Length: 370
Image 1 (cartoon, helix red, strand yellow):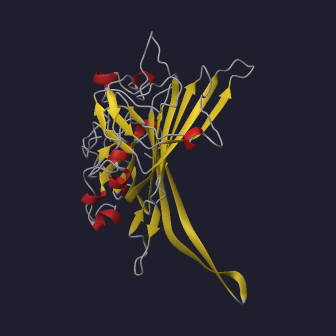
Image 2 (image 1 turned 60 degrees about the vertical axis):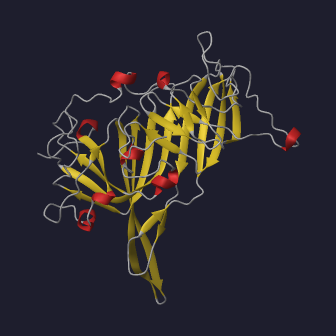
Image 3 (image 1 turned 30 degrees about the horizontal axis):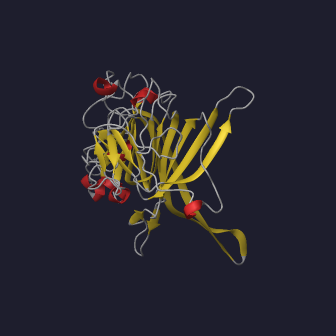
């Protein structure tokens, strides 16, 4: 019996390292046309997934007729977007780069993966058994990612993958390992930190430090720019008298890797999609202000500069660590709110660096340290 609809309980997203695939795996996904890729790992905590397919058409006309001469079909562009909560299971970024040898942006930049979206019967309570349909996508690269630490709702990871191959098969890519989604799933971090990361699971305190090279030492805590009201000279937000001096709200870390295709004569598909280094990494930190933004901006400042390099490191209790290094500069600051309707003043500090982003996790398949 065909499905009447697709809803969250009957979708499952999984990834396999591209290195485990043979050429036939990448191109022939139908039953009987080669061995299906094995070694898929299911993504947990996924909130949404989307697929966008663009067929690139190029028009050729000729002298002598108004009608189109040929509408040439180029290679398709496949874009997969997904969001998951931070829950102790591997991050999507890490599932897509499971054999990386370095946690840096460049260390993970050349990794490709095979992505599969399985669709199950709409009379099932969970994604299990034999899929009705599956979309298999080979040669997918991480193109963009965003990490959002929230005061309202769970902290999340958003990721975008790009590639040129997508194929639907009715046999399903039933190779998620281990077999999960039994209807009794729970966050991997449940015993350690109370489950899905919320505002109380962003670790503060003074038990962490960073040297000038961006190397982290310590057992717990996060580091914030000292320019932010309430952050001490070491970058810590240390609780005192039952409150933190800096009232941090939403923190958003983003980067767009700007993948570019490399072509060669004799081959239709690109042989590589490279990251356009240098690539910008941004960090926006929203605070509930009590005294103002406290940022001086002078045309002729004493010492010749308004700003200094800042260290940023975020430690989430469920295992995620985000290291933006020691060379972040304040790009802009916004003071707003506090209107006559009764709202609070919110100050947004927007920092930027280039190429410095290490995202690590205790459950990373590549087992890379911060």
